[in-house]
Length: 353
Image (tube, helix red, strand yellow):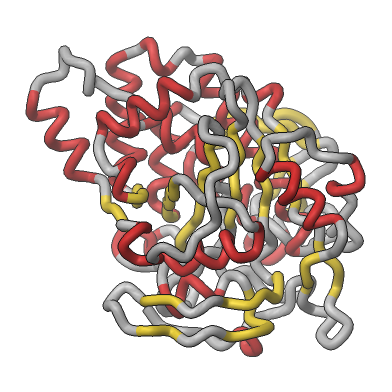
């Protein structure tokens, strides 16, 4: 992958779009709950199991990680890759080398697993990157004031996990990554997703054009929807996070409404689409592991899932970047770490988008 220095990345409020899609944890995991419990035959199991790539986080990060505070709570980092490799190039022809984690959500599932909270981390947040090992085992030195989304391109997904752990003080239990092609195929396997807009989407700069109201989107249009920035709302990168979270909840609701887990044919189609472009941590890198985790998540209702943006403020040196806002961010991380209710003050981001 090719490193792109943080200073050369476009503005968080005025940049042309390079590649961003919504990410979600329950969606990717539930899509993999298939036939692993019997009835599909060895071929189906072996085929789907072979689709999944994995990263050994413990080996890549080492022992210098936050302790787990609440044993039965789960924290899952969900990332997206904007790689143009393979089938992804047909969905976005932008002249972009390598890959970045342009969207990231830390999803907290409390003890009892009846609800979930997804915290979106803006891609343009200036952070301190810890020392990491890249995917070839080479040491990547620490750096200050680098864009969050650059960490992936410099040192790979394990370093993103380590960066989030350093940023939040929260132990990341699992990691899930999906790319352009995986997102599109997953939506198409569902037969589309229904979204409702309270204002029109103008289609500016190659984006999707939609009137106010309810729309059924296929995979290609869904990808355009979650990547739209200009032509909707205030056109900011922060504002797009709300659009992505709207789609995430709509997609989770679609899975629940279709009872996709109770339809073996639909389930296999979802699983095949979901696992083809799926990378997880090594503990989730099998159908049985994904199935077990998905079963434990069945009590999470999309209607009660809370979506939050990490509180940020515009940087005083470079107003086209954002920095973590304090004390709001510490209040947010402290509540999630201890599995407690998030105070209203922790959700007040000075930069709102």
